[in-house]
Length: 482
Ligand code: NAD
Image (cartoon, rainbow, N blue to C red; front, side, top):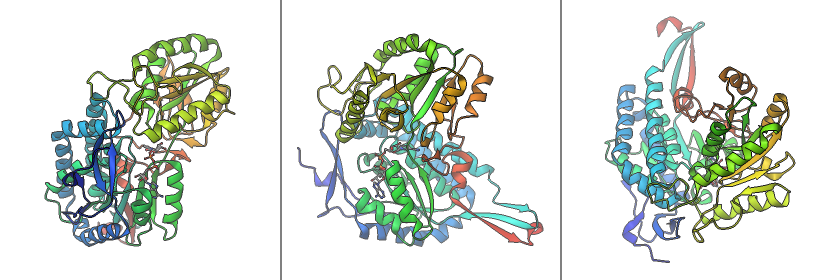
């Protein structure tokens, strides 16, 4: 392992000042394609969290009192700054979490820009004072927001939280994922050049126990917005409950696609594989179960195996690559364990598997994998894999398909394919999930995103994502005074 150049270690950004890194413990960031060292951040602790939260608290009254037009201008500048640094951010994301470069540019960075634009539109149309009954109903910023984010779409997840909080008039302390923190360091440079008052945006690097827990516990934090695993989401909900902090949780999923008998096989195969395999399967809303009419199963599975050839893993730095490595060697181990469980439970392996994909006998690569004959009693039907693994299950009637789709403790997303979009809509309305795509429709950054059941609490993006960062006050007897 090459020693990290101390000059290249990223320190926290607190109160508008880059913090000293000398003598600090560090966390190295590796390239999952080849294990090479990409960079390092300081490993934060409770004292760093305290300093950042105090900076955010001190900045809050002034930032909350700024005109909405000013906050909109700042978020537009942030979006423009990200667009100006698109190539650099994409390269950083490719190096630190293995996202193929073209995907990093278009999806990882592109969606972050689109998120900010949608949030700005939501803030513009927001009515912060309106008469309701005998009262004047007023919205106000929640206060100091703690944002904790994962590594799979790191910039997108930060943009949703940072953009919403800033527009609402909140100040923020961000703890990015320790697996992919370097994009957040670039973002901090952009923020630093924007002339924001000191303390409005603070970034503390580190892991969950060292930084995440002290941040959630901090008495001066008013709201915690978290995206990540269900286990950590549960922990955060418990910690935040101690002083009734507001929480917004975007957690995992085991989302199902329903292919109706009148659907095109080629189109549904292409759409399901794109959802399941893009970003090497590390997408919370990925359609990782597909329910296919029994009479169509053979043809659908054959077409899916053929189409998987188009998702062969490759070097993520190469422009034409569509499947990179997973984000870390640990994630590769976890995904291989899920594949081994599926084999042990009796699922039929159609393509892929636990072995290294051809030509990639190092790095965190996993071959896109499809299992047939997956039943509700198997772990693959129920557990989130967070890798490129698709479970195929046959069904007889439409009611069966809907029952199977809803047979999950998660409820993040879903998909329906049909030759008749109205029929697809009828089925979509019966799914207990926060989003559903018809005939391959993907993420809509202007619409609310979030989960039913154990997939989370609250919504991100657009109008509802902006409103998450607001408190509501009814001034009774003041309806006519607004
Ligand atoms: P993770 O839960 O391990 O980590 C997420 C973040 O939480 C990281 O910054 C981590 O350092 C921090 N953390 C870990 N332990 C903590 C603790 N005890 N207290 C406070 N913070 C702590 O998740 P991950 O592995 O980074 O991401 C993958 C998971 O995220 C998957 O389960 C996926 O479904 C989920 N996810 C959900 C969405 C969504 O919008 N619903 C989006 C992306 C990812």
